[in-house]
Amino acid sequence: MTAYRYDYEVITQWIEPGEKVLDLGCGDGELLRHLMDVRQVQGYGVENDPDKLLGSVNNGVNVIQMDLEKGLVGLEDGFFDHVIMSLSLQAMHNTQGILHEMLRVGREAVVSFPNFGYWRHRQSILNGRMPVSESLPHQWFNTPNVRFFTIADFDALCELNGIAVRERLAFDEGKLMLDEPNFLASVAVYRLGRNG
Amino acid sequence: MTKMIAPQSVGVVVPQRAEFTTPLALRSGGTLDHYHLVYETYGTLNADRSNAVLVCHALSGSHHVAGTYADAPHNVGWWDNLIGPGKPLDTRKFFVIGVNNLGGCYGSSGPNQINPATGKLWGADFPFVTVEDWVESQARLADQLGIRRFAAVVGGSLGGMQAMSWALQYPERVGHVAVIAAAPKLTAQNIAFNEVARQAILTDPEFHGGHYYAHGVVPARGLKLARMVGHITYLSDDSMAEKFGRSLRHGRNTYSYDVEFEIESYLRYQGDKFAGYFDANTYLLTTKALDYFDPAFEYGGHLPAALARATADFLVVSFTTDWRFSPERSREIVYALLHNRRNVSYAEIDCPAGHDSFLLDEPRYHKLLSAWFDRIEV
Picture 1 (tube, rainbow over the protein chains, first blue to last red):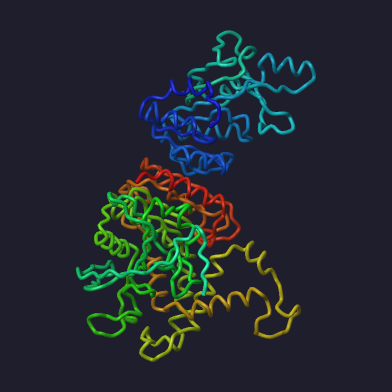
Picture 2 (cartoon, each protein chain N blue to C red):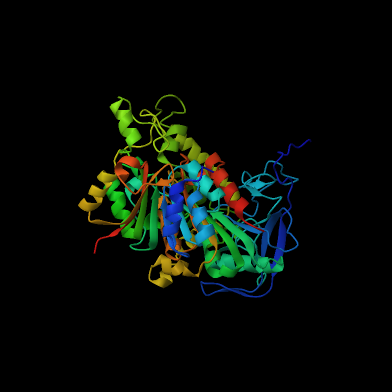
């Protein structure tokens, strides 16, 4: 099992008991296991890595092998109450496509991602090096991340795509940052819906 | 003679036979008044009778799923790599049952068995049987064995369809279902291959309308051709290319119709071997059962509606290079189960061997099955 992640705490608060939940890039199913245990959700994970998928099966979590870059073809419109993507959006090429798909199959989407605009990351760049931190733990040459964006960038993308930001919480090492999140927070968690 | 038994083998097994005298009404309209099934079991049924797992076989399979025979030590069960102590389907935990389908040719009532009503071989008079009929007959065997509910029903290919049908016909009698390298129904292309195979048998001069036994012959040529066509569909283009490529038996063209390319040699060998032990009437009946299988038909083709009855937890597995029953077909099953909020996991195993992959012990595949079986409480 990977270390408990504090974005899980926030996500759990947003899930009502008994909901249908889809977790994209569910890994070994840790979050879903947690939501099944404390929220009695009907949970399904999506994972394309065979070893991680095996981890989910070991944890007794429903897991469907699927390549998220190809969207969520086959899943019905509005079927899920929440579609979650925890710390994986930055590792996908088809950013707009997957956001659209999440809000197609889900009533709400929950997205968390590392904030590239975090002050330590900016400091690192000013010092001439790509940032390596708790939220961006890889080196530039081995990172699975393909999209580097800030909280401000993501807000702008939501605006552009007509996505409603229903709630946004930002953290620095587990501590809630209310002021200047784009500068002071290393990770952001969003609750998204469709406008109108 | 000393006999080596692998440490994880179930060892020497003995087929058993169960008689049934309550008439079985068949989907085709006929009735079997008196029939029997041969089966094998591995492991021990627990006191609660809650640890039974039924393994359903595919087109050419049998009840001999694991272990060997005392008088035929090299006759190893067809899924022996999966079943045994310490194997993914662990016989220290589960009581595993393999049954020869009705209409089969390995000892259950079928064309090559005596029709009790006439005292003669059934031959072509054996009635058409369907996947649903098989499940019905297997449920009666479970009754005889005192098994109220299976911990799991599993199968690959046509066996996977049977496992799925179990979940629909007896939802209360099956806790878990593994559908491997299967499909919710055959495509026109699938049926087309079956029809070529059937025509090869039906037009063989030795077929005699299915009563070849009486003539002391078998339609070996037809059966061989049927198997050759089948074999092409079980392998992937890549695995065939890798195994045989364009390799020539004599290193050069001989400009004849004898074996030149190694693939020709392989197909002829497989065809001849098969024609030597399999029954042509069983092949005909079984391919028809495959063609007829379509649980969504009576729901206007709507698979989610058809699967609404199922309550079991499902594992669906496909193989990337399987073009006979492609991953897309398995996904249809997954989405239909998802629609009904059923517990389902789905894995697409990267394996080069095509449809036959389900019989191999590819590590990721077997680890997955291991993990899934481990989670089943008995």
